[in-house]
Length: 180
Image 1 (cartoon, one colour):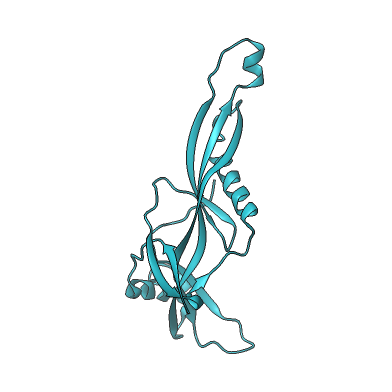
Image 2: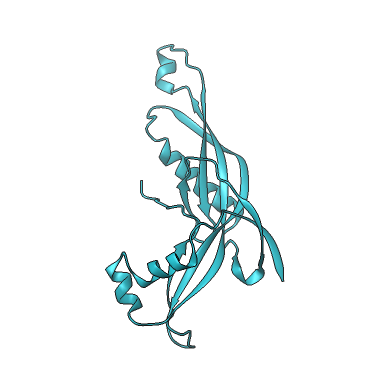
């Protein structure tokens, strides 16, 4: 059965994904791959693209001294992976395309909507932590369900009772860094 999804554009060719799966950049991946056959499969993993509005309220200390401060507002874009519940900051707006794919290639969310929204809000708080002394409030302005394409490299043959070794390779050209 076919499903129409909104996805990030596929920019990595299959040949490049095979090179990465073969470990041309990473010796540990090369050891894991060995001389095993590599099977590539294109999967679309669900993500949530949130735009949050952060409001900086007057600090309690400033109000004691009678300082007049204007509430400042800021918007921040966060992408939350709905399969691992991990969030990352996006500096630019995302461009998506509508694509028709089969149901077996689409992996949905493992988490409920509120937990994903809270995960994105926590990432937004960490991003603006530099404004020490201000009280902040965060609210989601918009949420968009977006699917990211991944090549899943499976090493060897799939046999029942054996552990499958696999490597997910992002096929949309975006690099995710979640350390802060």
